[in-house]
Image (cartoon, rainbow, N blue to C red; front, side):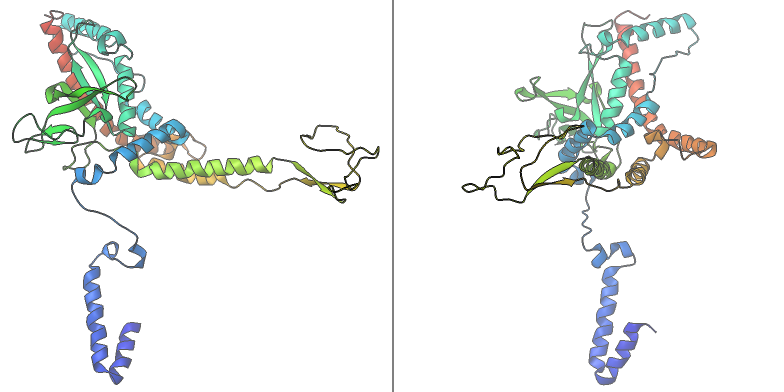
Length: 403
């Protein structure tokens, strides 16, 4: 018999009505709590606020601020960059090369030669600044930080083929657009969707290079000329979300901890000297003086090795030499980096490059599991490459480069 039941029995002796009310109210509370502890509203869960809704509904209010904070960590956090570098190394690595496997070997070699030439910066990039492999590396990085990136197919006369790529960041989607091009469609987050939520067009903002001035109305680009590279985690999601979101707060906490420890150690390394005066230093005839009768000021004086100096009469030197040992920062950082890596499905060694606590078996198991984690992003980037290659072949045939 529980404590509550014993109290009910005791109360029932004096007031059966009160005892029955206690039992009824307790049963009602049990029904409100439900069958899951995580679903109740007890004291431990009172501050756990969560909302339910579609993926786009929940993401759109936080998307811009989360992206801005992710970019801030990219600029200022070494831990964030170690995590991103692991993805870029294992997904793109030294670059991707084309190997054509068809019966006509001569045609295959011709395609490979033309592809290698097109992959140069002046031929594949509409700005002429990045090669194809560099574009892929930047795309993987932006997908982890920004949540996604847009590949636009542009048909120009600048390169070896009338086909080039223009890379756009997700910020360039015009979220102020609400009127679709086709009646019956809808516009969400700068993307025109059919009633079945199939993208058919993108509204792209056009602004000056400084990013401060809009040049004219948004440009509408057909979905056939756009490759939206992002991860879709919910079926009701139509826009991206930074993939570093679950671990960003922990990365910032680790950075703040390192900064605090650094400040503490700098303070501990300091040596300061204070002059304690025994005699009054103000008033007529009360100023402290040296042995020769002149007043000595310590303003701007510094300690130097082998220094010999004389104090005013009655002055005393007090040295402040902070003592203390550094906090165990290494353990704290290791735990945080391990949790940050786990939040991305990776091992601690893959992101920290620290193999001091691993052996052959654990390292091999980690490599196998990390490979499975990277497989999803490899598949995503390869689907982008497949579509780019298809457009490359079509452009090569239409321009007469390939028969």
